[in-house]
Image (cartoon, rainbow, N blue to C red; front, side, top):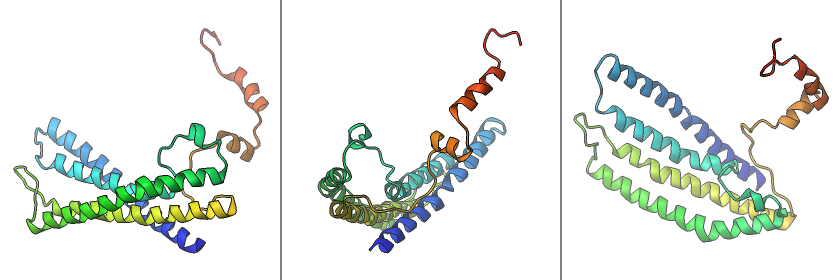
Length: 206
């Protein structure tokens, strides 16, 4: 079972990392459009529509990735003090009452919405119309991935209730832990304090 859970984690991670490249595309595109608009005086009417669609794709496809890394916002001020079984109980109830109904509705409605858009070959309202229906399919795809990752998280909750500890999950980039970093490079607080005398302070003439 653990291998299946980690396999879904890896799929969500791969998709998240793949669609993260849209950030680079967006950055280059916005930079190019600003240059074209304000330097060359040649704005493109389709540029804003593409930017919105790309950002929407990035936002939607990052959902399963963030869930797989346990990165969605929660009230950690209280949650972090609870025992693993208590955390798992809270998570399980919230997944069943709110997550599953919401994501099932999103996926179902998104599939209907995308197929209706495909049926009429929907395009953007601009002087240079762009096909819109391919991006509408991002909604049910991202919803399906969120649903799959959600089932994985529900299994993790049940496992934690049984074993009393959270099962492992696929790891990716993490925030820098300063204390762990100091341990890795063998730096102590007194070493940092000793270096402070070499740093010029406000009002210093040296």
